[in-house]
Image (cartoon, rainbow, N blue to C red; front, top):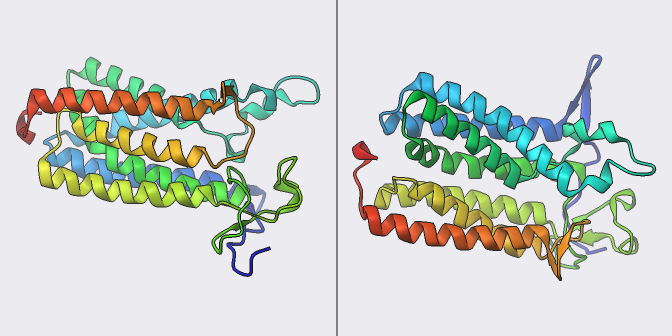
Length: 272
């Protein structure tokens, strides 16, 4: 073990009377609150109505959680179905397992449908939420730390993460410290959120451009961080599925941003 290292928490839940409070769930809730508060302020700055924002956020959160869990269960179905598996654990969301691709896709679709129904523009909503979503993703990674999951390759670096023997995957039982990929993504996401706020003030990135930059930032970071992870994953050739997804979505985001920039240039917030 490294002389210096990051310890893993010894608990992942605590009790309040008969209730078991899972820290992962608290991190998800904290992220939702931060995304909402940040997004509401930014949406009102874009002349959006508060009542619309409250309704679309509630719908987006519910759809996002369902979508995130569905993506996780579908892509990691072997964890819940088959010999020796307990199928109803697929509903135990507090134990971890939310796929960001499913959360953004289904949550975004639900918000888009709401906007269509109410006759309001979707782009200002997406742009308003972008920095808060990235900050929320950072907070969610703290939950992975408490669950001792989604860490990377073994390392002797001074910021290596201590992982209990019970949480080490087969083939890595002899190692004690691993790359803290949760921390890498947390720091990347926080830096990305700060950049989004700065860039929007600097260039007024409306018409969906700020959200597109968010997608590009997240997928670029997810691509290189995913290369370090050792948790079981489906592969496309030699690449993890999330690597392939991140790469494809990143290219799509860059192309979309170029198209939007050529179309709108330095736009006006009031006409977004």
